[in-house]
Length: 391
Image 1 (tube, rainbow, N blue to C red):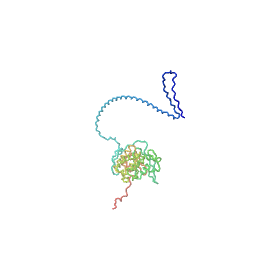
Image 2 (image 1 turned 60 degrees about the horizontal axis):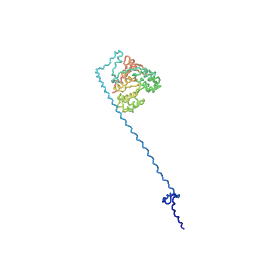
Image 3 (image 1 turned 120 degrees about the vertical axis):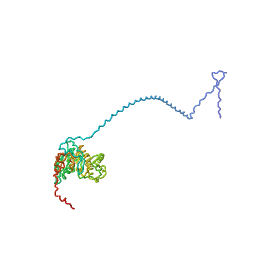
Image 4 (image 1 turned 90 degrees about the horizontal axis):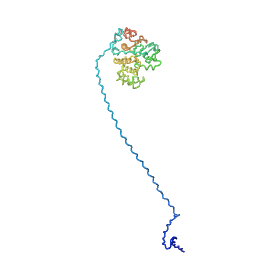
């Protein structure tokens, strides 16, 4: 059965309205729809993030005003140049004449000693000899021998000699063959030890401190034993280094000595190819290379030509003038008399005369005095057979 819906009722007149008034109908109020409980809840609308305000721009700093350029300092005026000094006129050269100083008058006893010629005879040839150097005064002798004896078996080659050699002197030791000259010089040089007695070199006892004594010596031995398979340059280098000299000093002194002894062209050759005179010169250069205080020379002029002898004498004289001491043996009486300041005559291992040249020779020449002390000339009789010839 179908139910019928009731008919809508007419609106009732308002209580305040009078009868017969026109009734005004009101519009129905809108009905708000209630939200359905079954409908899903709407998601809340996302709020757009608020934009961060843009940071305020920093104000641009005002540019510093450019400092005004300092005005360039005014240049100092250049100092006025000093006027060049006027050159003094060169003094007029006086003409001078070189003259030899006049020597004081000599006594008759001094005439023979001081008026010797500058050219002497040696081994039959003439040698130019420099003037004798002055002797410096020193208190300590360069060489002192006291009671020196050297015996070979039952033979005394040196028999108790006493010698004093002043520093800065040119000392000659002369005597006949077999007199003991070479043995004495060998003991001074340290090549032989004395049997008895003392030897002092510059105040140093050669027996107690031989190294210190030998350092003060330069030696030219007799028989020229050396390393003759070396060249002259190598030999001088060996001598210098052996004496403790630096290599650069040895090379410089080798050049100087080679020039002085006229050996520059021979330094590259082996010593065995040298002549006897050249060998003696290179060994004398080796004795001088370390500039010793005392030179001991055994027959330095033997087998040396006159020109080389003059060169050697000049070198030795300059060495003595500078304070060095030379002790040499020689058979050239003229040479010893002209050059040496003191001399000793040695015969049979004993000193028969010693002192200055004037004191030893007296009124005679040194050669005459030497012959007199040696026992005079030997007897030449008994050789009449030489007058008969074998043919």
